[in-house]
Every structure is written in C-alpha cells, then in structure tokens.
Length: 332
Image (tube, rainbow, N blue to C red):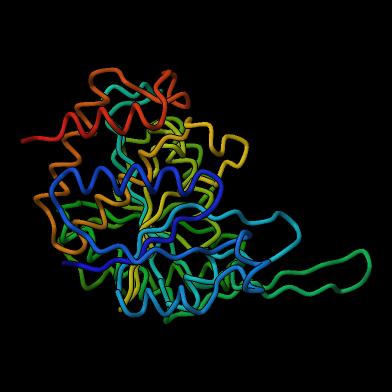
C-alpha cells in the first residue's frame, strides 16, 4: 500500500480533504495517508507554521497532497507554500487549465498548461527597508533555474503530446533579469526541434488570453508572472474552485489546489472539493495509478454533466452532497 503525506490545511482544508480521501477510497484504491498539520493553527503548539515533522514526512514518502493553508497578508509568518517549495526544491509549479464539462465560461476549448518557475524571482523574499518611506525587493533570476524550468516545460510538452511552448517575459524593460530567462529559453529550445517555440511579453499575453485563449498551449514563466497568469487562466475555466496545481522537484512532489483556505465558510459544508480532487487525480497519474485516476475523473465529469454544482459554480449542492454524487458515479 502506497504511503502519501496528507497536509489537511486550515479553514476549509480539512473538509475538502475528507471529501477527496473518501472518493479515492470509494474508487477501490487503498492509500496509507500520513496526516500532517501545518499553518496558523499549529503555531501556538509548535511555534512555527511548518514544523520539521511535515518536511520529514514528505521526504520519507516523496509525494504529498496538500489542502490550502492561510497566509497572512502584509504581516505574520511567511507562506507555508513558499517555504515548502524552497526547502524541498519544488522548482516547477504545474497548473493545467482546461474547460470542465457543463461549467459555463466565456470561452470553450481552453486547454492551457502554465509552467511556473517556483524558487526565485521576487519570491526569493529578499526585501529591505531602505528608509521610513522606501522599501525594496530584489528580483533574482539565474541561468540554472531558468534553463531547468524551460527544460521541464519542453519535456512536459513532449510527454503529453503538446505542440508549442511559449515563453513569457518582460524582457523589453527588464533586459538583464528577464533577458536572462529569455536567453535560457532559446538555448533549451534548440534541443526540441519538433516543438514549436513562441515568445510573448506578459502584458500582451494577458490581453490575448482574455480575447482568444485557445491559441495558447504550454506557457513557461518566471515566478511572479506565473503566479498572476495561472490565476488568470483559472478564471477562464470557472475560477479557483476548479483550478488544480502541482509543485514538482527532482525528488519530491506536492499536489494542491491553488485557492485559499476560505475561513469565512469553514464548517458550513459549502466548499467545492473539485480543485483538490483534480490535484489528487494528477497525483495518482504521477505515481502511476492511471486506472484509478481515470475512474475518478470520469465520475467527476459525469457529476458535472448532470448539473450538480457547489455554490461557487452557481449550484446549490453542499460539499457532502457533491462528494456523494461523485462516489455514486464511480464506474463499477
């Protein structure tokens, strides 16, 4: 039986974790979940939001499924997500954004994969208070990290039958940092003659995404642009409630939804488990459990086809009702 770390998060995290665990068990796949807690709720007990035991669990099990953890805005502890990515060198943030059945959006045929560099850029967290009225953040771009993420994007394209990889920068203004990322892309691209290459500025990309998103295939971006653009792409397919994510490194992988912990609806049975479930499906593929991944995906799609939605998608189904319908629709 495969052992996988389960970080159940806070806010709605434990509720949607329970749903996904229940669905996976109903599919017939047995997983030994190593349940770990992190975030604001553990600080009073352990003094830190990400205890060493959580990192040790992931290092031992190699794979984790993670629910959202609250990150304070402007003060408090550093993001648990950022720390996990740094400490485990989860350098690739993978965000597939694809239309789901019967989920009404402004565009059809959206099937974009956002590949975001995960370890540097402004998210390196190097900030200084210059004086009382001035603060500065330092943007770090290295050739090693840039070439590594570009190679990940091209390898993903080859493995998944994708036709094009498009690099996104603002190299016309940040000629050194973004220029280095762009130059790294061009060098890596030479090794993939069968994949089309494209270059675009991030502001132009955002405009074109809301006009004609189906023209894009795989996008590869530095950290900050990737964070912003991946949420934009989530909006194209129905919002963060259906947006899956994965953070992948050489040795470890953490799969998680990209939405927040929504403490305002905690315990109200209103949360949508779809994003965490899609992340879990991607996790099952990652560990080679394709049969169960496809089985669960079919049940989710059948549930959506039938018009059963949680409130964030315009429906009135509770989290528990939605979960029960997916289980009922699992192929026998």
